[in-house]
Length: 405
Image 1 (tube, rainbow, N blue to C red):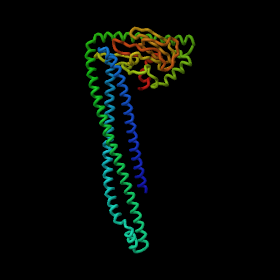
Image 2 (cartoon, rainbow, N blue to C red):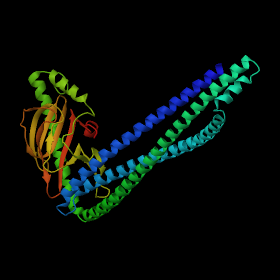
Image 3 (cartoon, rainbow, N blue to C red):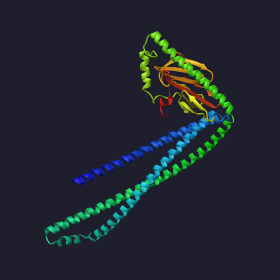
Image 4 (tube, rainbow, N blue to C red):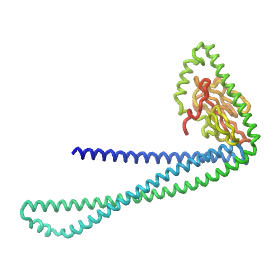
């Protein structure tokens, strides 16, 4: 008895494990399909951006940035499709094995049932059944023969039901196999289309890179100018932080390194609790330049540094505050156009490269409230928001604070 119990327990765990795995697989494929849908939307968006930049018919860093993004999305799409194909192949293989097992079971049941029907047909005459009972040696044998006839009839009925159920199950599995094969054909067609598009984009990327490399002197000059402008903004921000702390401590006689009021401390705490949940400062777009140091997209052996992130978006796009706060400064700076600085307790967000500003110093803004329009550089064919985040004098990586798209 103990052995049987242990065997049943082992069987229970095996079945539970298999059910759990099938559930995980189902969740995985659903996640893959959602990722593919989002990927397709992102590709369509970058295609619109490409159409806008191509209108100028000249190579630029803006065009290269969008091309790089689309290539990345295409590669993600192909990888996603391949994972779905692997899953579908696995499903086809499992279904084929199930069909083979069911066919074997069906053939065995059909053979048994046919023999039972033949035997039952021979015994169907009521007179024969009575003779079979009356030929018994005693009452006990007659009763046993009667029970046998009942059990035989019930056994034949159950075998018939099993045969029908197996046939229905087999047909369902065959339908599932047909559907899986159709899914595979659709995925293969998508994969071919995505691969063709990727090849085309890479050719265009190569041509743009080749043309940009011919403008190396101009690119280096523009980079030096940009770095100078970025340094000026950084110096300005640090001066603002220092002055704000000094004035706050002097005016309100508050304690602490940066003289925060109790209300500002609460606001800063609320801001900090929303890491990874904050809305983007643009309704649409993608990160075209990451935070920190990275290689220049064209110039060899040249590394660039970004104190925030660059978000490439569509022309005439608005810029919005990512959290409630107070507009403390509006600046006009060479190479960065208009700059808006918003304070959120001991945090600060900086929005650069705005063409127009819709707020003024001292305004209280809420999350997602428009603060201006982003400048479109006609020469570079791009609309880019330069976005920074600070906590006191520490630069933060905005990518880790914004909601994942």
